[in-house]
Amino acid sequence: MPQPAETVRAPAAATPTVDIAVNVSQGAVAGAVAGFAASAVMNGFQSLVTPLFQPSGAGGPPATELAAQRVSVMASGARLGDGDRQAGGNAVHYIVGTVTGGLYGALAEVRPGVTRWHGFALGLAAATLVDQIAVPLSGLARPPWRYTLRTHLYGYASHLVFGFVTESVRKVLRERLAKVRRERADAVTLDDVSVPLMLGLANGQRTFTPPAAVTIAAAGSGLGLEGTPLALLNSKWTGVLLGAAAIGEYVMDKQPGIPARISPPGLTARALGGALSGAAAARPGKAWLAAGIGAAGALAGGYISYRMRMSLARALGRDRPVAFAEDALSLLGSAALAGYAAMRQTQREAGEPEKLAA
Image (cartoon, rainbow, N blue to C red; front, side, top):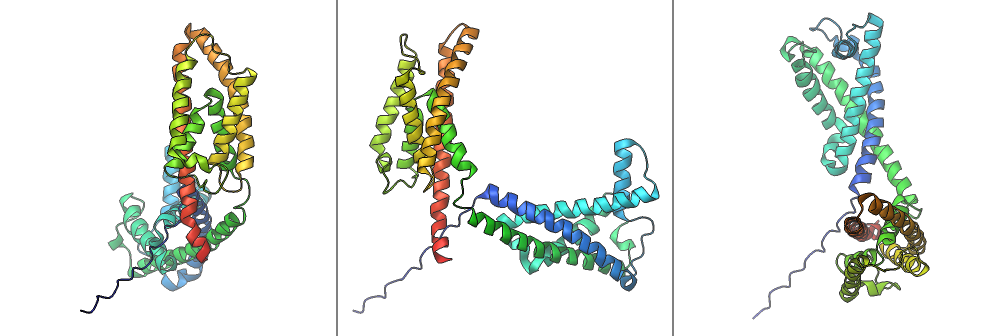
């Protein structure tokens, strides 16, 4: 019998690296700048085409000036003069355009479909939702049917220009920001300093808790330690041993006669733990830097936490509640930092196929 043809499966698409906080913030900034620029272009366009469209049917000042007047009355109780009202209307125009652009830029990072038709979709949406619905409902304009067809065409044409310019400028700025970010990929980032520093501070409180947390993260989600001198931390048994040591430290810490953490042996152990934790949580190429920061953080954390514990214990008249609170702070902080480091490593690994294909 003929054998059925073997089904060939296409390789799964690589999961893109999504640093949501950075991407959305950069997108919002690019969109806001683009929205401001588009507002200026929109003003110029309206000045040019007003004789052609001859918008009419409303009478009275524009909705932006009425909005500025309303804000002035609500804020100070005073009405604006003609000159101030016109300036206020321009300010409202630019503020609305900038905010709209910022929201559009942020949304484009998580829903790229909003950029379809090179911004014309944004223009259509803005004209419909703002001019045709929101402005009349707010009492700043008459109902849409009270305006002539030319006025509606004028409004839609103006917003299509706004959308097109917003998307054009946003795209250029976003590509530029992405290029700068790629060029700075090897530079020292806030994560490279803050994560090992905070792990070190936690190590100043408890010697074994941060190393146990990063080891458990390495054995679980992974910290990219394969092929490095720290690959032993990928073993679940290393995590078990360090976890047991951390629990033992919690118990011994409550016993009388334990040497102070600021004694030379105590500080040495904490510095080694901080260096280990920082290096394990670091991104590739930054392990030595993170180890140094982690060790320094552990030394500082040892002194700071010792002084704070002594002061709080004297104030409360009891040491044990402070000790338990310190246990919880070190445990929760270490777990959160180790989890964050594992998440960042997962994002980096997901982005590697894209870099290779680029």
